[in-house]
Amino acid sequence: MESCVLTGNEIRELILKNNLVQNYIDLDTQITPNGFDMSVKEIHLIASDGAVDFSNQKRIISETKKIDYVNDSIFLKKGPYKIVYNEIVNIPPNIIALGRPRSTLLRCGANVGTAVWDRGYSGRSESLLLVHNEKGIKIFKDARVLQLVFMRTATDDSLYKGIFQKENI
Image (tube, rainbow, N blue to C red; front, side):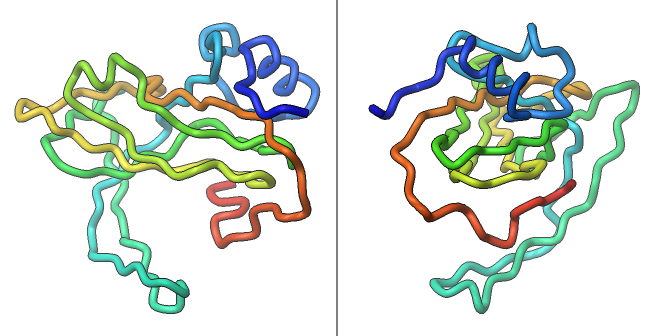
């Protein structure tokens, strides 16, 4: 089978039959023509340094501190933050996903940095939220900030087995 981007209808079918995405808020709102909108559950300040190396033996994941919502929103000044999504994603062996920021977020002067959702990954994902806007940005609880685009792949035996498997669930 050729690799291809899944349509909204294919994504909906995989959600309903195979739990591709769980804990979504409103399927009709979050399904897009070629993706699925992920929504914000939590926002964290990055509170410590981190470390990245080749073998992951010296890896240090930065500590974070959860920010509380005030009247269902959080005002963020310019800088980096970690977001945790409401949704749990369960990637099957023949699909990967890439995350792209929603255009509204970009138009407000913020961006989301993501990694690849590998074949076999399951978890409540986290991403980097970068606020570039000098005036800041207000993020409401459950805001849709990222679109996941799912792509069919050729299958083999290599599935995700990293330390973030089953994260936040």
